[in-house]
Amino acid sequence: MVSDILKTYLSKYDHNDDNSAWFNKLKEIADEHGFASDMKAYKANPESFKGNVSDIAEVVRIAVTGRANTPDLWTIVHIMGEEQMKERIQKYIK
Image 1: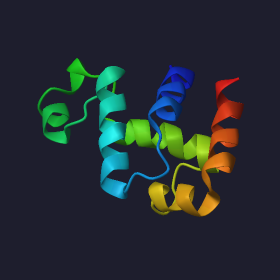
Image 2: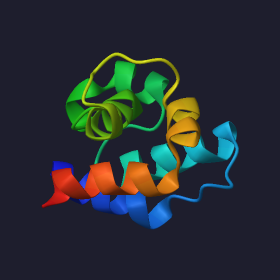
Image 3: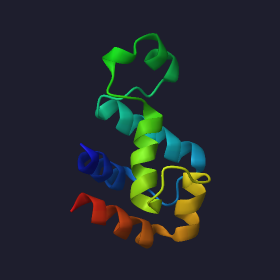
């Protein structure tokens, strides 16, 4: 499941997206993989989902940084650069 989420993330990733557009894509990925993109829906009916959008962000965060807790992930990726981010994610996919 993790590699599928990361593959979807890479296919949707656009380094030119602002933070809002980037997060909306994380929500799309959540929906596509059976996770809740809406926290209200998740809290109302958690058993209907595998998790929520924050779980999707955590998968990406760990693949990119190796840590579960970091500053803003969008900012980290932009400081790191697109190529390095993609290389790190590819290591998790393989």
